[in-house]
Amino acid sequence: MEDSVVPSWQPQRRTQTERIQQTQEKLVRAAIELLKKGRYVGLRTIDVAEHAGLSKGASTHHFPTKNALVLRALEEVYRSTQERALQRIAGAGASTREVLLALMEDSKAFFLSDDFLLSLDLVMIDPESELGTGVKELARAYRLPVEQAWLEALVRAGHGHQQAEEVVRLTFAIARGCGIRQLIAGPEAATDPLMDSWLRMAEARLAPARTPRRTQETP
Image 1 (cartoon, one colour):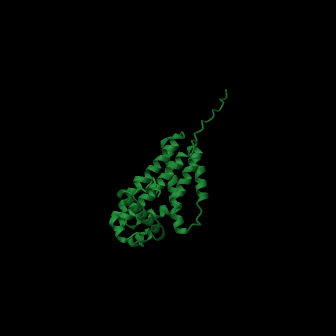
Image 2 (cartoon, helix red, strand yellow; image 1 turned 30 degrees about the vertical axis):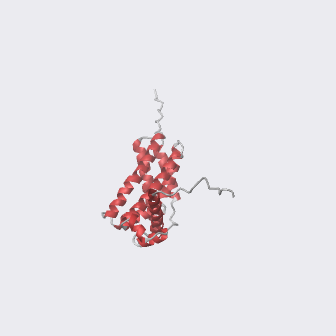
Image 3 (cartoon, rainbow, N blue to C red; image 1 turned 90 degrees about the vertical axis):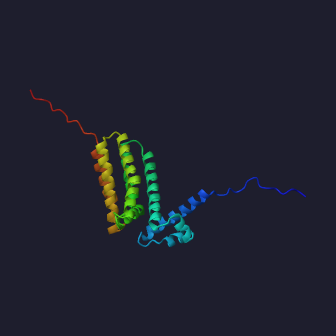
């Protein structure tokens, strides 16, 4: 009788740390999806657990409070948007126009998306509460470095720090305003024409100053 063949490989068992991480990731993804659908007020941790295919006990074990789960979900949103912004900067090219086009794309991608509406909803619950303070801390930790990275990209393209800072901050301010207007007026609110107009103004703002031509003196 031939010896039975034993597979040379065995499925690796997940470590405790890996199991914890995967459970938390499921809860965070579920929380993000439900927050984008129903916002903070309508969110219940039991619904998050069910959406993730887990028990309520698993949810409260990893995230004892609703706000702890919500802030972790927002951190993941900010982390992913920061990563995408840095990828756009890395692939933007070196010319002023290439950087500006990528900056416009990045600003619209964040401020016209559910990611921004989610963060806006959370901070407006009560800006001075523990939740509101946590949201602002996350915004400073993840969004301000994005602003700084775009500023540095324009400086590398040959522009002064002050001009680059003005253009980046105004770009984000315009896109942010369009995002809020879209929330009020609906998705039909036109954004591209405004951003196209701002692109032309930003290019003019960053253009090197022309040296005035000397007029020929009359004898």
